[in-house]
Amino acid sequence: MAISKMRADFTCDMKKIWDTVTSLEHYSWRSDISNIVIVEQGKQFEEHTKDGYVTTFTITVFEKYKRYEFDMDNENMSGHWTGIFSQQGNTVSIEFIEDVTAKKIFMKPFVKGYLKKQQLQYIADLRKAVEEG
Image (cartoon, rainbow, N blue to C red):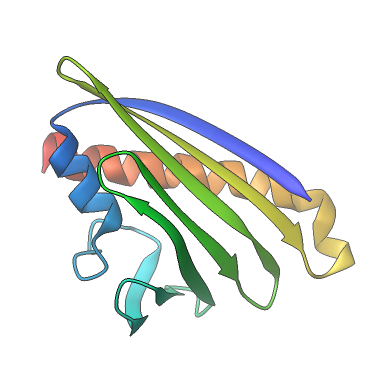
């Protein structure tokens, strides 16, 4: 099991951040995703990466402007993702926590580094979408 946490602050309003992160229809801001398929509205979706990997996400918590959580599963890993959102003045803070278990033993030493890399890319893409775009 590997746990990775990432926190970032944004200068924009909460609605813009929340809508960007939770939208399953508008994902073009994500540099790593080629397609999102909604399996069951409000409950389950699949992300298809540009490298051809498919991950299934099952939404477990959806507290508007506060908390978004889901379970994740693909051929290489399974786990849980938590997004915590808060706002103070003009600053929106987000904290993302991923708790992942590699399914293949040879991948276990690389999981934490992979998660950090993915989270950094996600934050960079999100910043570009909400602050520059």
